[in-house]
Length: 153
Image (tube, rainbow, N blue to C red):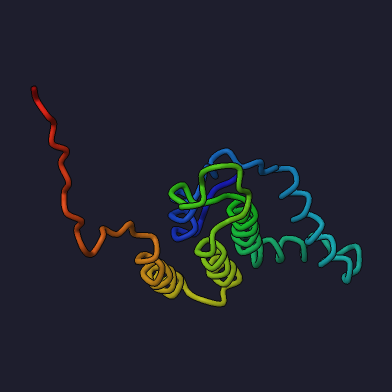
């Protein structure tokens, strides 16, 4: 069932983790969608419920699926670290500061608080702000090279 309809979300998932092996249940998705439909149609008389269920499906099913996918991706990516994270080594479970800030941007995108263009711009700005902190710098002043002299006798 897991098909990403949102191109930006598809791009994010390709770069951020092994989302092809997400534990996503088709049955869980369908049961939740059916529950949402049943909740909607219970306000109508029994004879009209099928017609209103079809109206709900026509009006809301696509958006419901997209929101489901966004939520699944957000849950999965909140548990992983970036493949090139400077904190990826060792037994550390915590994420780096950059990842935490990026997750906030992802949550804003998933909640439709920012557009895909704003998400990309903000993510690039975030990475730009922190890239200098992650660079390994060469010493400013070179130390004189000391060579050992051997006594050859």
